[in-house]
Length: 245
Ligand SMILES: NC(=O)c1ccc[n+]([C@@H]2O[C@H](COP(=O)([O-])OP(=O)(O)OC[C@H]3O[C@@H](n4cnc5c(N)ncnc54)[C@H](OP(=O)(O)O)[C@@H]3O)[C@@H](O)[C@H]2O)c1
Image (cartoon, rainbow, N blue to C red; front, side, top):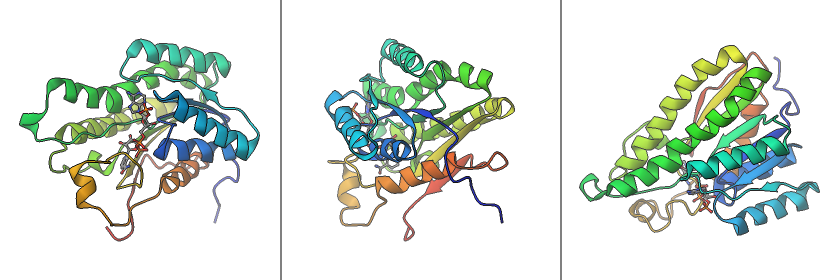
């Protein structure tokens, strides 16, 4: 049986939400595979901590580029800076940044709905749109969208979050059709609960307290696995849950 390729063929990546949690684990894993990394989120401190971990592990510097992904103008600046730093050759875009929101629909303000959509869905669209033309012209690129099992099911009092993540999965599915003939791969990763601060203080956190969840490294390992696939193999969407669920 043929095995997956041993080393990654991609060299550069932008990881959003790389300051903590799943994004940090993905950034570290890709850096350990030898990739050059650009890291974004709002908190410069957290990004610097991720960059310091990368430096300690690999001896290489990662680019730290703070950006509020709710602001299209900042996204445009970010895309320009990353492209310049990597001479236009951004191989991998990991749309990982996300926000959780929990409330009954009638208690959800339009501003809250918009905030959830801007980070979880519009930012991946804008970042993809920024990097896609070059990926297509180079016939080389990987777009990894970190969705959720909330992209596949409804959960109580998570209408905005579930709608945005369903949207991200739909976006990924359609994007994959556009990209496939141009040699660009699109992966939607749909994790169940992961041990991060993402849902801290929420009712759902209270409900699942004490239950085993996935580790951020489980998702990072999956992303490396996806990027390692040989040209004839594709995993367009992957659900990853703890075994017991
Ligand atoms: N944890 C889970 O159980 C779980 C399950 C399924 C899917 N996911 C998905 O996995 C992804 C990562 O989640 P996580 O658990 O690692 O959460 P996390 O620990 O809260 O990290 C979220 C990241 O997104 C960034 N972010 C949030 N709002 C932003 C904004 N406006 N602009 C730029 N960056 C922003 C945060 O940085 P700043 O706050 O500094 O901006 C942070 O780096 C999310 O898309 C989430 O939906 C998580």
